Image (tube, rainbow, N blue to C red):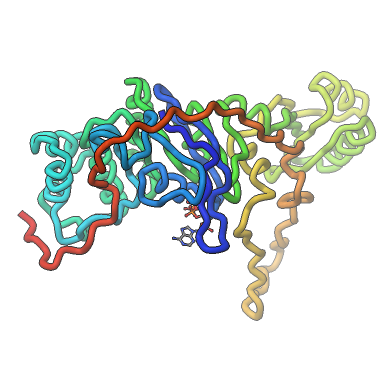
Length: 375
Ligand SMILES: Nc1ncnc2c1ncn2[C@@H]1O[C@H](COP(=O)(O)OP(=O)(O)OP(=O)(O)O)[C@@H](O)[C@H]1O
């Protein structure tokens, strides 16, 4: 288990992580989510002893990483797939990591097979694509057959087959009772992979709950209603009827209406009374992505603006209408109700037993003076 208690990190006057307390339990995939710059990598670096907390602590199985006996056999991590000697072959890179940690050389060929890099094992890693680099990083994480695994954006650069493979790998590792902590910006992927979520924003805990609870706590159920596409006046008539009855109606991009505040039978009755035919009336729950967007909308540091293309605007071809802005989209509240207040109780940490200082395989290696030949 990974346990953070009051974990805080300042870089000068910048607070990257503030008073973060959470537990990552074995037997589940725990997703670690947060907008760009929210402190995920900093937290992972502190878990792996690569950065010292300014205050608070983080332990793995009760020990800070650097005091963990035989850390490389207990913890595997993919932090930065580029942190590899580019002149070394994939196999030699893994062999040197294995040697550092007393892992038998035959394990290297095993993990190369697991990540599908057997064919290119003797090629220099500097020629690797982003996805191949990720696979090599995952191989390094699996090398010691560890009980605790951390992956920072593991599917970055992977093709659909690779994404599916990572998803199944994470689930299989968790099913074996391991602790799997994985950060990602791909919400659809997290919805399929993670059992539990830890969400942070501006370095602070926003949520610590199961994926199912997160979605139901942060999303409003809604109805999708569609009137005949060929009769726009029906859509307007229904919008007025639903609004008058106290419903909240928003147009969806595909022409349907998203209705909150009215039960499905009531929507059906109102449509009947207004003499409006329906092509669709269906219940929906927001996706993890929508729930996440609503929760984090107040803590996003980097927001895009509309590209005005000043001086570069092309006239629209004759007959083409400019796109209609969707009312409310991008505004606070678009994603309905406010997120619940975080308030996650935590248990005091187990005292850290002293242990020998272990070599840290996740430290970014220095470039070798002379690149090795690929064998
Ligand atoms: N070594 C450093 N020196 C100064 N500031 C840093 C350092 N490392 C991180 N930060 C700052 O701390 C904050 C958190 O960064 P971090 O990389 O942990 O976020 P993140 O959630 O991993 O972001 P992303 O999703 O973009 O990878 C950012 O504002 C970042 O600029």
